[in-house]
Amino acid sequence: MRREGDGRLRRLWSWRTRDESALAAIEAEITAFGEALNAHSFHPGQPGATEAMHAELARALDAYEQATRDFGGGRNRADALDALRALDEGRHALACLDALLAGGPLPERMPLCFFDARHGRAVRQVRWVPPGGIARDIAVCSADAVRLAESPSLIAPRPEPVSRFSGAQPRTVKFPRTTPVSVPQERVSGKGSSGEQMQQLAMPSYRPALMVFSTNERAPVDLRFEDRKGRSSRLYRLAGDGSAVTARIPLPEAKGAVAFRVFAAGGRETWTAAPAPLREVPRFHDEINGTGSDVVHYRGEPVPGVLRYQGPSVIQLEALDDRLAYRVTVAKGSSGEHTFQWPGRGYYQVRSAGAWSLSTM
Image 1 (cartoon, rainbow, N blue to C red):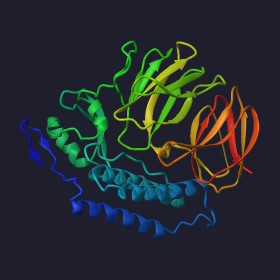
Image 2 (image 1 turned 60 degrees about the horizontal axis):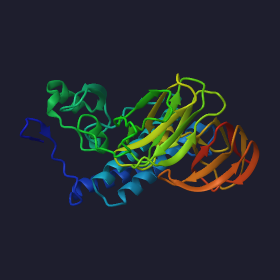
Image 3 (image 1 turned 90 degrees about the horizontal axis):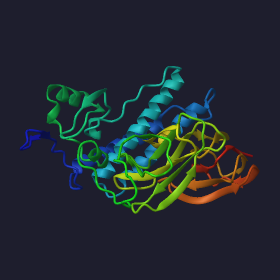
Image 4 (image 1 turned 135 degrees about the vertical axis):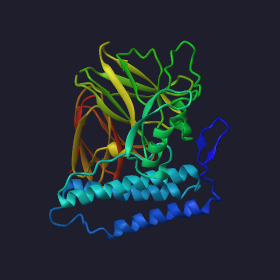
């Protein structure tokens, strides 16, 4: 570390591609995790294996594949951080699998250290005020917790996109002057809306990401993403059966913040939008059901499937790629039962305004 001119301490970790020692260490971690997966004693076909065990093993395998893909790119700072986050996801999945096998409680999980992912798992939540910013709760490792307790102003904010919305001046997004635009936030909430205000959700540091949109009232809500010029992107009808909304929606790729509008039927509904990682996506092999728009993770083989739907308008099942971008429409229809072909394991988006179920034949 070194002391800057303003008295703060700033880390001197090198993340340039020529820092072969740091990159080699991360590559060794990925290799070691792959070896741990191969050596693990659990087998999906063993007696007593449960769906939860299958899901945790699948999550660990997915995390290993994700870490390998992330680190196989330009091998720069962003690639390294993405690989570390994927490894952390995989290690947590294996720990959960071990707990399930032992019949014990699932391990609690803290995120990686806010200031540097290489510090490892955070150990506590602390209150922190970035220079020129507002107070916020962050998760930090034990060393940074001590440093913050001794002198809160000595640690500079981490240089990640999301941090510039927690103290530094947010990047200006140009929308039409007639449209009120909110300040980017890591969690956006409101009450009712007729779409008159452009909301902005700060993009998280991890990718890909979801938006979890929820309401506390029973009313249909539409959400529409906007581009940087205020033009409509995709419209989501999140509920249509009069129930409260809890929907997972793929967040479009955006720099800094993603813009959206909310259209609620009444004016009393309190709603909340927050980012979430892929582990929030429900996994299934044979059957799953829900209401409104959602994202699911099919873990089965390419077999015939059945889509059952009860609601207004039409329902659409879309296959997504690894970045949660639209790939192809798998099934589409009105109320009733529809057969289709599952392309195989992967992420799928349900675009619906009513109750639905998905299953294999």
